[in-house]
Each structure stands twice: as C-alpha cells, then as structure tokens.
Image 1 (cartoon, protein in one colour):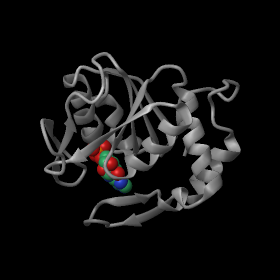
Image 2 (cartoon, rainbow, N blue to C red; image 1 turned 60 degrees about the vertical axis):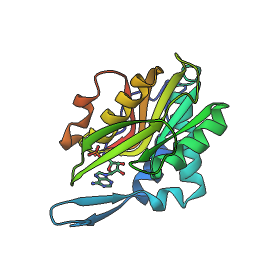
Image 3 (spheres, rainbow, N blue to C red; image 1 turned 45 degrees about the vertical axis):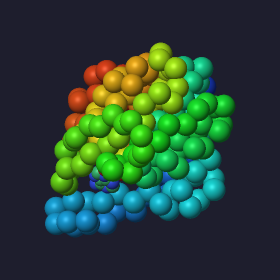
Length: 188
Ligand code: AMP
C-alpha cells in the first residue's frame, strides 16, 4: 500500500505514522458480499479515535479553502462528510440511495463493482456555484462517485474535488473521474 498525492513535506499531507495506523486497521473479507469480491472494511478505522481524526484532518486539509460544502455518499460517506463539514465549517449534502428523498430530486443510475444502483440528490439546497467536495470511503470502479459528480453538476454546483480513504487501484476508478482532482489517503 502506498500513500497517494501530496508529498510528505506538504502541510496537507497526513503524517506517515497516521497513514500506517489507518492501514493497519483496515480489514479485508474475501468473497463478501459475493464470490470474487474482497470487501475492504473501514469500520475498524472509524472505531479508532486516533485513526478517525487522522482521516478527517487529512481530507479537510487537502482541500482547505477550496470548498463550501461536502457531499457524502450513503452510507459510509455520511460519516466522513459530517465530520469534515464540521471541521471545515462547511455545509453538508446527503447523496442518498434511490427512493429515500422527498420532494424534487435528481437521479443518476450507475454500475457497482457488484450490481447496479441509483443515487439521488435534493434540488435547491444551496446556491448555484457552491463549491462542493465529494467524500466516500472507498473508490472501487468509480461508478458511484462518477454518478455523484453528475448529480453535483446537474444541481448547478461547482465540483471542487473528490476525497476517499481507500482507493482500489486495480479497478482504475480514478480514470472515470476526469472532472475533478481525486485524493485518496491510501491506495492498494
Ligand atoms: P464503485 O462505484 O465501484 O467505486 O464502488 C464504490 C462504493 O461501493 C463505495 O461506496 C464503497 O463503499 C463500495 N465498495 C465497492 N467495492 C468495495 C470493496 N471491495 N470493499 C468495500 N467497499 C466497496
């Protein structure tokens, strides 16, 4: 596993000890939720106060001053978005799975590493041009975050970038996200 993006000397880089601590907590479950998938469980990272603070600080610092709102993708992205939003004094948008939001919503269909799904965003929550940072736990094939970028752009917001804790590099999800910079704390 290697740390991505910012060099160690940059103020926004997570300390290598923090990255190592997060890496050590990652759990892997072969053949879950179906054969052939190695599920990467970040819950042990969220359950460790030092590791959780390290990932929130890293995500907030990486894009400091560049966003007015964070968009968290259901469900683990909510944990990141709430904390980063609080840390950065930014608004929080919830990108939800299909059928859960009331009122007028934008909808995007997308493919997963396993299966397909639908994401939705309520319209009119923030002014047009609001700078939005998208957050999720894992970047796999990139379908989920690509669909979210489309929602953000269709809503009239300006996409600042994408932040994830873990990128599964073999799946090349980053290649589907040409619209904005992608920051992953850990790549494997
Ligand atoms: P994708 O659209 O393929 O990039 O999938 C990303 C979303 O699915 C994230 O919200 C992840 O939580 C979840 N996901 C996909 N593949 C995995 C995996 N191997 N381990 C853990 N979560 C995954």
